[in-house]
Image 1 (cartoon, rainbow, N blue to C red):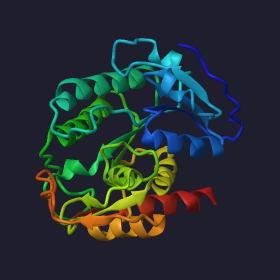
Image 2: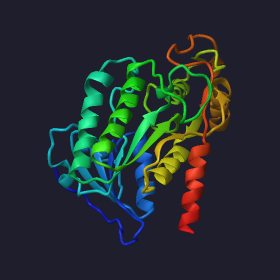
Image 3: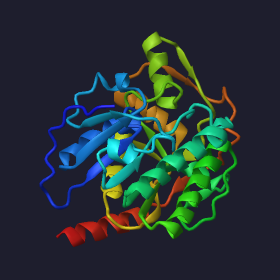
Image 4: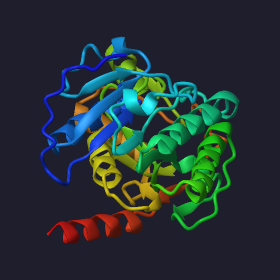
Length: 300
């Protein structure tokens, strides 16, 4: 496991050495350039370094498994100040028990190992599915009640890390993401499926009724919010990362069609609504905005 090329400038006292797991994923690929641009020394942590060969980021690249068996992970990742944990597998199937049986213990043991070895700041991606079937505007103070294995595993990981803080204090930021979209997103997502249908020349695109109210951010805006939040050196806890504004799926898809000049008929009502989500929910962004405003004020 070697280092890749790094041309990062870490002379600024406010910059950090950041290990980013899941760096080759959809969010990671958009986030790394922002962190590097801000002067941080970035260590891109990947399971398969081959997936990173097409990227030209000025950062270290380390191939590392996400589990607790690699006892020297902290040293191999350059003894980072911040562990920015994006990694997670099986995201195409929220109902898979793999999230509970495999992902949950592996990610907890990895993060625990990094904390026990010296990491002082940890930022982890959570999910709005931790809220379960609660409807309307969702704020961080609500009790979680996940209804699928993915949401359950994420929520359990957060609770385990909070218990870990009692034994070995560290700063934790739990970034509870809502929905995102953009180029190069996973093939199973709505945006990618619509784009593929257009590229095939399909006359119609089958979808649900589209009346669900959701909270969506373009990936560039999502990555910007994560970069702003994750690098704050405080114990913040849970923070929604969202737009704070509900939009119907129907209206969103129609906007995609218009902005991309896609010529395809939307066949609403073909699929039933997902059973693991309420018909209407979106995030409250007040806490995020207050945190960023305070940080900007302190930075002068």
